[in-house]
Image 1 (cartoon, rainbow, N blue to C red):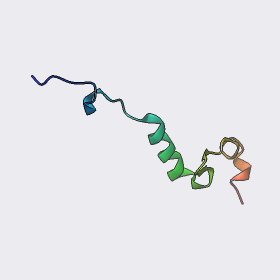
Image 2 (image 1 turned 45 degrees about the vertical axis):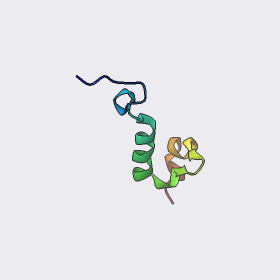
Image 3 (image 1 turned 180 degrees about the horizontal axis):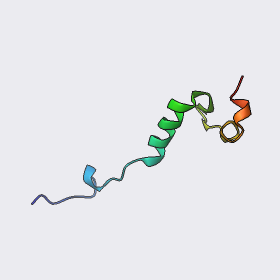
Image 4 (image 1 turned 135 degrees about the vertical axis):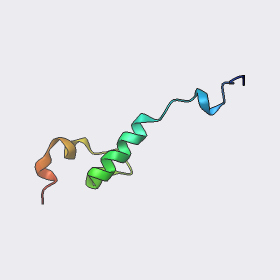
Length: 50
């Protein structure tokens, strides 16, 4: 059996936040920018409708 060390990929958890941001970007590209997610646009759907 292989011994697992602290730097092995098996010791890392999935980056759930990055995955969720990518999903938001796919659904609502207007709300995700370089600075992160604009929560105001997500919580006020009338701003997304043009």
